View (cartoon, one colour):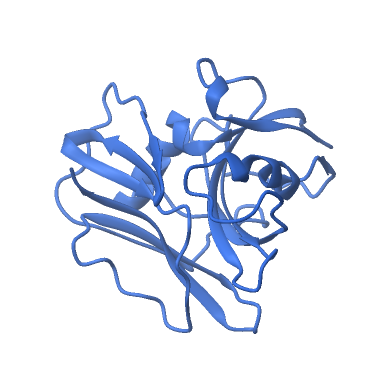
Length: 217
């Protein structure tokens, strides 16, 4: 399981995201977002090489407070062929230089997301080592997905990121989250699979949103 190092990171993750978000097709804010890290969770890389994190980054520049989903991977060396998906680099106080990628373009993250949806992977706490996150919920119907030879080819649109997945399905990352307070929303009725998670809201309530959905193409 991944070890969380409590150390310095320069620039911070929210600083990297603040410079990267305005160029995305699904971004809704102004030229200078003011981000706070509101929540999220992690997944483990079975090989122990790639950090996988899902960050809820809330833009507080306007009273509406828009929450974005940022799936990120952290690597100790550049990912070949993924220059277009590089969010930036940061200096980690323990691990040194880390290359930070939009995880929708990273096959390690996509493989583990599908494993999470199917119930073969466990969501882990964002900031505590070796601790499952029991407030991440998933569902899956139908046969297991075959990942043989799968290479992610995501496409952004105004609503998020669409990723053709194996067996004629489409995995959608909901980049602009639609949080509801209090009770966790039910699984989307027309989805083959989904992931929902919660995070603390500004008024001490719990916010919930659907992070990913899997549907037929």
